[in-house]
Length: 133
Image (cartoon, rainbow, N blue to C red; front, top):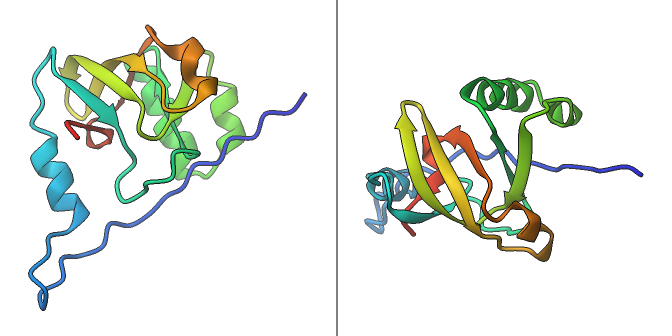
């Protein structure tokens, strides 16, 4: 059995001066002012596709190893990290710890059926991926 994980990397668009709209990075910064105990969502900046996944690590070291694998575009390498697990982009979570630049969350509701076995698990991920809405 093979498991394929696809994770999209995207640059955030700059604000459009002519229309006065704000960029998604500005919105993410505004939504990132979460406090421990707040409910929020796991979202990849600029990506709305719920089939994309967000990977978390059981420990801060696991989260750092995930980030290194993503930077190297070594998606199979994520599968070798014992404490790594992934949920759909848009899953609901409760913020339970903060340690810049990471956040620890507990998954409260998956966005896809395959996420249901992750509900209740906690993990670390980059702070930009945890937002209020």
